[in-house]
Image (cartoon, rainbow, N blue to C red; front, side):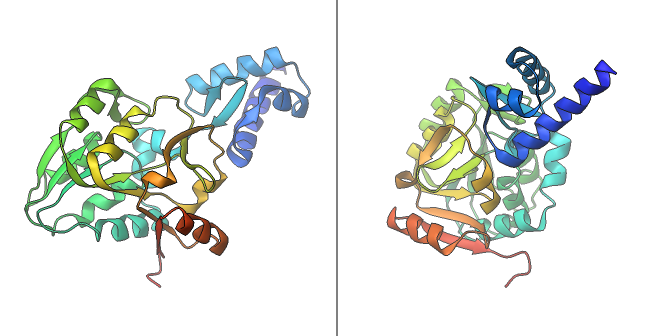
Length: 260
């Protein structure tokens, strides 16, 4: 019975965190009528299983950009993500040098990149690189190198950032675990150097993310809106949010899975 209660509670924790975003340990303890010590043990287990991200003092949802490779492949089949990826890819022209960040939404861009000529693409995602080199009109593909992160299925770390900074790019397509209209793109992870390196190495930064990412309450800012030129998202963004982003100088492009 105790084991069943533990499993039920942990399942409930995952559902609550995914629905409500970053949640404090004390709030979870009160909600599930147990001690903070028990909740911390639950969060450690759930984090090791890749179901949530344990934060100092609480837990955050596990972002789509850090899912397993199988889940990421399934996630890229989302009609909304596919529409966003297609629209983002249309911003790339011949002879351009671009960076494509890892993530399930940015990955949907790749199938639309077989048209531009003399394209140079750097990425930290093996899945992106593998698809690019299979094109008949094969672009020049550069890998960031760095430390392999099995959770995000990408290369991360200081060495990856150093590699990115050795080049100049026209466009950087960056994903986001969360969106905060007041602050910028956000993440559960305090290690944001690679996103910053990508932004600094490119003439224009394009964030590629679903509007649903507004529900992900992540504590750490990756890129401030002042660093972003374009947000490619879906039609779920409110007029008020678009107006506020416009005041930051961000152009919002919206994609519809119906092509409307």
